[in-house]
Length: 89
Image (tube, rainbow, N blue to C red; front, side, top):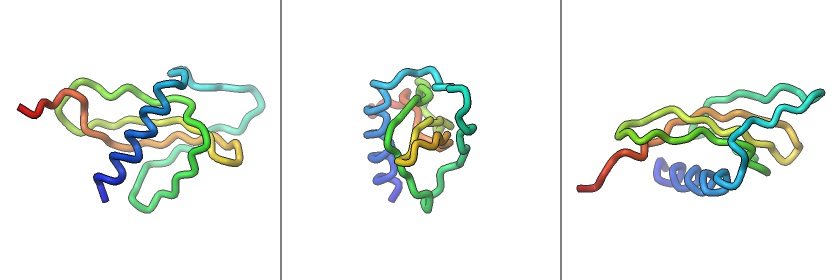
C-alpha cells in the first residue's frame, strides 16, 4: 500500500514539475482546504498548482502539494516522503 502511495505521489511530482512553485492567490476565492494525507484520503486532483521541494536528506520529511479539485476548489495536502539524499550503495 505504501509503495502504491509513493508511486501515485511520484507521478504527481512529475506533473507538478511543470507547475509554478508560487501559490496561486486570486482575490475573491475561498481559502484552500488544508488536509493531512491518510490512507483513507480520497484525492480528487484535477490540476497541481505547486509542490514543495523534497530536501536532499536521507530521512522521511514533510512536504505539501497545492492542487485544484474537479470542482475548482483549492486544497493543500500535507504528507510525508523519503528525502532525495539516500544512496543505494
